[in-house]
Image (cartoon, rainbow, N blue to C red; front, side):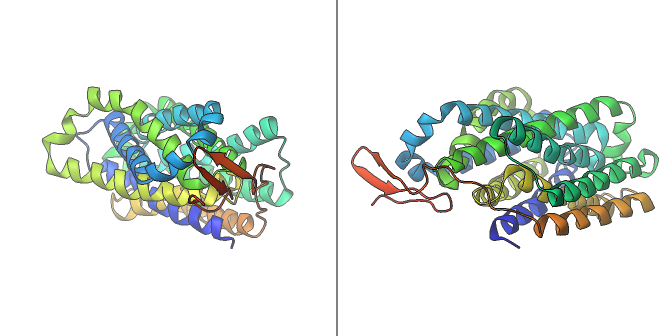
Length: 325
């Protein structure tokens, strides 16, 4: 398995814990959870990448439209994602949100970048989306935990928000990958995209985040979400996007709903009937097919050119964080 896919795979496993962790802070609304987790995690990304962002500021500024579009998608994604999980249940909200991302990423790549898609990718994605659908249909509100029981009142809204989350996930994955393809390493790109997204989420956090500070357990949940799945997970995801396409990365990340479902079953005691186990099998089959058919992402002609910024010269490659020469 290519190293880029391994990075995405580990990131997906970390993201699979977000739904269960969020369910452990029932007193905090989904907008507050989303804004705090992605917002603080994004600001951590920017802080950790500040040095390389300063080195590559000229190249980042040259691609400001793509960076800002991706940052906007980063800001919308957690609000839609956590709201979907709160309304449709941990398992269903996750599978709809993440399961809709690979087709969305493929459409974006096809329309904007004219990127061809292999038959094996199509087969792997079909298996994955079928697995997502099986898991969604297997959700049983009457025998699930509290998070899923809430979904019975607003299932359509939860699914709609899940589709919005899937589209914005595909959009910022595509935008980050596109910026890297044009000659930037992963750290400054992810720092800029998620740092700006984090800034956009701060007003939402200020308006909705009061319940977070009322409980030590709430603070612990938010700290975990910001540091582990959001900061560390997206560091790994960025490394993966440097070498695989957004459509491949989003397909591999279908492991997230599988992990989320297993955790929801074991920790939240959500019920998973036989169709759900079939869905898990299809998701793992999708992972195997995609892993054996992945192609390297195309790089821009800008890669390996000497790019000059004030007082510095560097040779830019897509897979390394380049230090001044």
